[in-house]
Image (cartoon, rainbow, N blue to C red; front, side, top):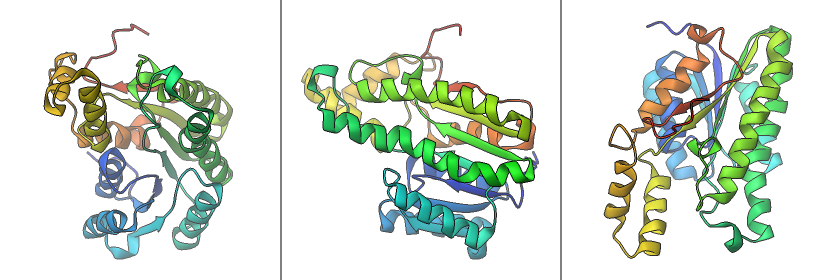
Length: 264
């Protein structure tokens, strides 16, 4: 299917692996010019090489950046616009904050979570919106988590901030719709990424079981009976970025295999 976004400029944050990488690859396959960032140069370079094989080296830019640092985000944005011109598609994405219950969390952990999980969304959106408004076209996709709608006791910071991002998504969608800028949130469920294996280790240690048993427990709670592959999440993101989703804005789309039972 032609997604109608060939030649569009897309920025994908935290794109060196996992869901971010899968989204970047999916957008490249749809014909976008890609700017990707991540903290680790080695994995980022490898991902950029994979994308270059799809779109050509002249259509991919990789910039080492920590999404929790405002100056890194500004530098990434400037490099992108200098290389490709104005940004059409923004995908905000980040690794999850520490896994812990409420009483085990310090102020420093909360503050770090706000910087890496919430303020990067605020800062990146603020950077790209003026250009989108000038061209009357834009797609912004905030990758968050299932816990925005179904809280998790051991993901206290993530649950709190992801729910806030869903509210922010709705607010941004309302404010930017007159300029044909569509803003949506993507809420992945349990997905086979490094984060899933990390959480399996945390839960295994707490329960005195193996990580494999912890992953199996997670799969048993999913109606589809398995964890997602990153590409299954990415396909939903590419759709939201496309012309095929031209009348969809302000939603928080669950891609969770049926875990969340809320009818709303």
